[in-house]
Length: 256
Image (cartoon, rainbow, N blue to C red):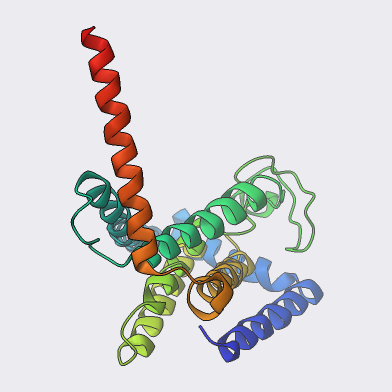
């Protein structure tokens, strides 16, 4: 999560943005190829593609659930057993959950997908639907909710760059490579399923990375905004004590 990686990703965003804006037919051509490959006339290919994409999505979902559960469990255990040390560092837990909530959560699924009215490939007239194609940069289309730009599943998959950033230094390059491969595989599965255009998945990765990069800088690189793990644990211990006190008072009033 250094400046070089940010420059590279922003460069990808510029190239992809201009490329898909000047040549929007790229998105349509890829979607057309997917549609032809999965057409009922190619029943064997269609069945295999459906099996592969379904399997990849299922595996991806469980990977994301596991990585999300780790910081949540760490917080719950700390609140329930305040004298125990957190299962993972407090700063890491906050970084993981905040990057997930802000990136794939608020930015992608709340701000973009419900307001950027780009129809999905499977909704287009060219592929048996009723809606019209619009390029990535045009926010006005026929879709009204849960639209194509950007891919929520691709964003969640690329969020695995956040836990990869916390891996030990010697393992971090491999963790980044695995996260990128994971995000790419989920992106391909969504394209093959007719759920998204290629540009949707590229920008999902870009936006998610930028959110992760900024939060990593806030929590780990910029000294004025850094929080110590001991400060976080102390705050959680105080919250736990307050909750116990409030619960005790509530029980006491209930018996009186």
